Amino acid sequence: MDHQTLIDSLVRQMMVAIARLAAVGGRRTSVAHITRNIFLDLSRELKAHNLSNKIIADMFGLTLRAYHAKMKRLAEIEGERASSLWQSAFAFISSRLTVTRAEILRKFGHYDATMIQGAISDLVESGLVSRSGRGPATLYRCVAMVRDLEGTESHQSLANLVWIVIRRVGPCSREQLHELFPAISTDILGSALAQLEIDGRVRKDAEQNLYDSELCVIQSDDRLGWEAAIFDHFQAVCNVICHSAEAMSTSADRDPYAGGSTFTFDLDENHPLRDPILGLLARLRSECSELRERADAHNKHRSDRPQRPFQVRFYLGQNVTSDDQEDVFNEN
Image 1: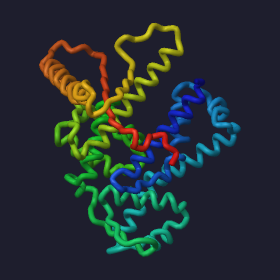
Image 2 (image 1 turned 120 degrees about the horizontal axis):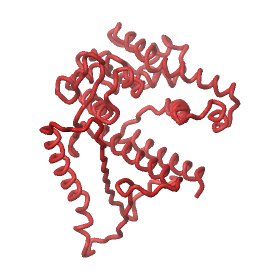
Image 3 (image 1 turned 30 degrees about the vertical axis):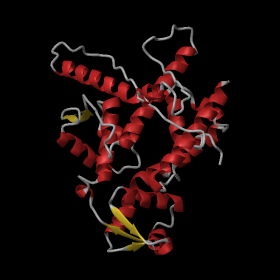
């Protein structure tokens, strides 16, 4: 398998995952911005790997002039959606008792309709705006200001996600976090950070205005933590895959402490190893939790901690499917 086939296969699998997450729980999460974000994010990551604009343009099949024009246009749209359109739509809805979808579309008619719908969906999902009815007569009401978000499920879920990002990439500034969450307004992000500070989950360096966290634990049964847990797990898997690919492309010896393996067991109800195999996840999760607690307890009372310790991230996952269940690559 060449690199192109591998990349195509990974993208296909990622699209399957996005589609399933967008519809989880019966929701219809907006995906209008994804194609734009893919181009922007991929361009920025290629740039971070010291590739020139000319090479990146060639990789996208564009001329250098067309590449620059597209980057400029998409960056402007991204900025409008993430800040002015979102904030303007919220201010417009807040200024009235109720607003219909038709009124919003007329007010912001100079924007693309998918951008407007995306901004409204963000407001509804954030808990700031309520929605009732269908079609052009759909009514929107402002039900909460940013300062009232504390305690809501949407706010707690966002706080968990921000907490994980700070733990993984921190210390980081609010500006860096906003770059990682461009669709979240600065007010809502600030509210989540304030809640994390109050809870003691995140600390802020007053002199450098940087946020950091020594520990991030979201329990497997946390009803409001599943989004953050999925992000953390996916990020860990991606890092291992990239590290392994880079190592295998060179003549360097394989790192015995890093990598990943996938095991598949074919079972039935009467298989003698059914229970031990099905119990793998619970046993390994319990063992890892105990090791982490012991390591954290030791680090907490240690006075000779090195300035640059290394971090070990171990991930595990388990799925059980039967022959009559739909395969994730099913084209139906």
